[in-house]
Image (cartoon, rainbow, N blue to C red; front, side, top):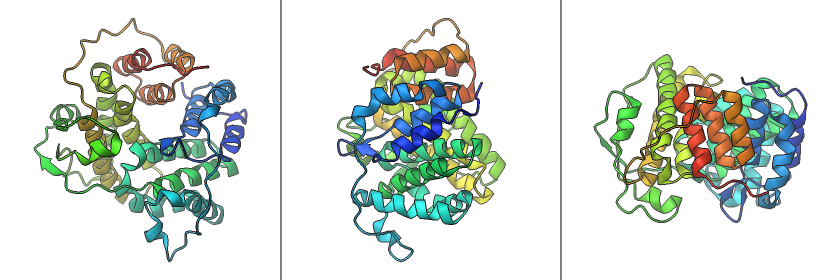
Length: 339
């Protein structure tokens, strides 16, 4: 049911949003570009500006510049959130001077170790930007990719020291084997620092096509699992599915030698989120009567929460009954966007 946005509303939304920064209230992610792209991709471009009006109190002005990022100093600027504007400028110049696929291929392996950045929102924003560009290449969409990559570079966050536990043959069973963190309290960074052990899965995969199939399996397993485990944290556990799906959406525009490393990074980040927010027990969830994909989109839009809309977008990529039921579960668990 995915359709290309031909009305120009998505491009108008991107132009409107590029006056604002990637975060608000100091560290919360600006979801507006991702939601706008999700709505446009599913035939709801007419609702984009109405949704943005509801979300507008969470938009903050574009941050101040510090010093230009250059080929000589980018390493020291990597992971410095004060340099967000500098990084956006850097990537804006890059995608103006070179094909955007070439820029992405150059920077993907540099940024991939920091997939955990800002609760995985930057890579998710990149995935939405890539899908928009594949629908149509123009300046607003290239600029959106620059903003997404700049956000990722500014919040780049590698994680080391996680010990490997035995995994299982499937992504679903390996996720079941993820041990919860011992002290499941505090914010994202506090919990991430408490992740000590994660099961390995697909760590021996080197073939690009096998890696792509593994990513699809990972996204499906994480989406299905939300129906019974999303109550652990209805917002944060969304990212266990949407982050690897962003990687999957981007994979085919990257060199094939990057596909297997992308699978491994996506699994580790998704498993870490599972460990950080796992509920004590799964819910005995009985899904409502089956709805069509169009009906699920309409329910998500009526609810309005940004994570619900983006999770529904991922569920629609899978498209099976379990995935759509998980999207409805997100609607049920989350607070609606106040209008």
